Every structure is written in structure tokens, then in C-alpha cells.
Image (cartoon, rainbow, N blue to C red; front, side, top):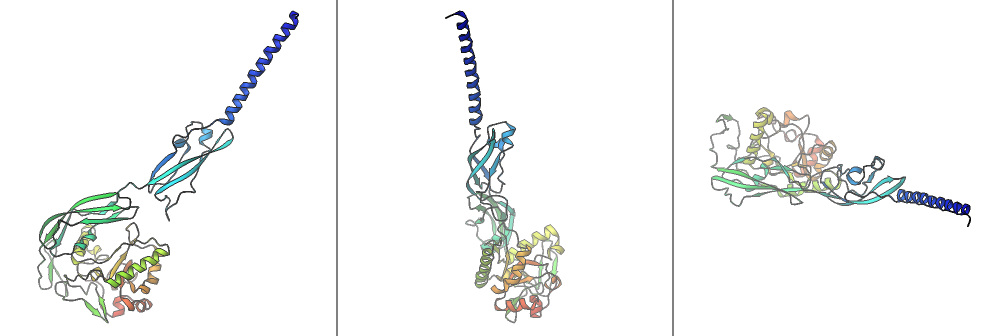
Length: 391
């Protein structure tokens, strides 16, 4: 082969080689461009119950490319959100995420786990409780309150407590939610001898005498008018009157609560019902300590003057333990309580008659008379023709 032809052949081979290299490089680049993947940093994420579930690309994708991070999206439609809240229920959820890489959309599956790991928080927890000898152990319930996003209950261990023997004891109070998160506290209980009766007088903590025409220590039985028990600031109950919860009233309040829950109202199965004389004494004194007596008397009854001691009065609660006073809830209660034998005891605009500020959550069981009282628009004092107002 002539030298000229050999040279031309060599040049052609070089050209072909260069072309092949270029084509291979372009092909590799195109393949990589079209098949580039971004790894997940992790595929399972845990959130605390009550937290809003929100994810960002930088928390999930193993990349620093802003073009990818900025196109990240998560599909939250599988989350089961609590009613009237912005956070999901406890559980495990499969979510899909989307992001764009090199012009194409990639999809990945991740898992979201929502757990409740927080113990209930006590909102009412006295260091010491003083009660008179002979009190009922159920009286202790009203001294403790707690809050939690999950349903919970308060348990009181009174195994070492003797309510019939004066002395100093320690009880264990446990707030435990449905996920077994516990908050245990020890509380001192001092059981005292019963207070002395003194001709219509009783002493407060400052040993000052409070004079009343009728007191829990001078009346021997509740006052009834037209077959209805009346308890207000002029008509006290005996200090040792302990009927506990009225069976029919308890049955009806639970029926009312059930109907409200069926209609979608956020009403708890728990309620504040019967309170003994000693329990009310403790509650009232706490309010006096925090707000002064004048203010406390507008929303809390002194011991012996509380309808809760009758076993016929109930305070409705939300599931978080707060009192029910939302307008829609209050309107429904006001318009329907009579169907269950209840009246809204303390109405707005009637404070000078009932002696207390309006309480849309406080229901009093009066049985068959409820509808007639409701239709009259009158307070119980007006309906029965008895004196109301202050002490």
C-alpha cells in the first residue's frame, strides 16, 4: 500500500476513534442524566401526637441541589386529622413524596409514625389536703385535675388512708392516658376531727365569725318548695348531707352527653357532679386565696351552699377538661336540657337573682318540671317564688 494511502487510513481510524469516544461520552452523559437518582436520607419519620406533620426536601432527600429541593412536595392526604385540629391522630401512615430531577418527576414512599409519648399534666394538684373525719373517699376526686391531648383518667390510691381516723396520710395520685403515659404524684392528706357546731356560727381560717340566719350547722334538712329542692345563698344544706350522685339524674346527664357527642359536639364523658361539704370547702377556699372572697362569691359557692352537694347538679366538660361555654354548645344545651329533666341553673342577666355569674355548663336536675321552667324563662328562684341574691 502506498504511503499516502496508509496515512489516509490512519487519519480515518483516528477520526473514527475520536467520534466513538465523543459518542460514548455523550451517551454516557445522556444515560446518567436520564437515570440520575436521589437517595432518601431515611424512609421513616416519627412525630409526637399534637405536632403538625410537615416535611421539607432537605430533611428527606440526600442532595444539596436547590433545583431538586425546591420542587419537593409531600402528599399528606393519607393522614387522619383530628376533628377541629391541625394535627393527625396517633397511628402509622404511608405517604408519597414527589420531586423533580433533570426535568422528570420522581416518586418515593415514606412512612409517618405518630406517637403519644407525653404524660398528662396536672393542672390542679395540692401539696396538702385537710378533711374532716368521716369524709367519703370519692370526695378526693375534686381536688385533682389534669390535661392531656389523649383521653386519660385520674386514679387515687387510698389503700393506706383511713378516713375515719384522724391523722396524717400520704396518697398516690396517678394521671394515666390511653397510651399508658403516667404522671404519679404523692399528696399529703390530713384527717381532722369534725368542726364544732356553734349556734349558727362557724369559724374561718382567720378565726373570724361569720353570722348567717341559716347555716349548714343549723339546718337539719334541705328545703323543698313544690317538691323541688332549693339550694342557694339563702337556703343552705346541712353540713353532713351526703346523698352522692342521684341515680336518675346521673342516668339523664349521661344520655344528654351521648346525644351531644352523636351530634358532633366536643363533650367529655366525664363531668363534675356530686361534691361533699368538705370538698366544696376546699375548692371555695382555693378560689378565695387566688381571687379574694368578693370575687370568689360570684362564681363559687361556700361549703353547704353548693348545688353540687345535692347530687343533682352537673358541670359539663370538654374532652380536654375545660368547662363547656362555646356559643353553639351553650345554645344547644339551653334549648334541649329540659328534654332530659335539666335546667340551666345560672342564666345571663339573672345574676342578681341567682347570686352567681352565668354558667352555661351548670345543669340542675328537676325532673318533669324542667320543661315548664324552661318555657317560663324564669330562674328556679323566680319559678318557686323564693328569695335569691347574696348571702
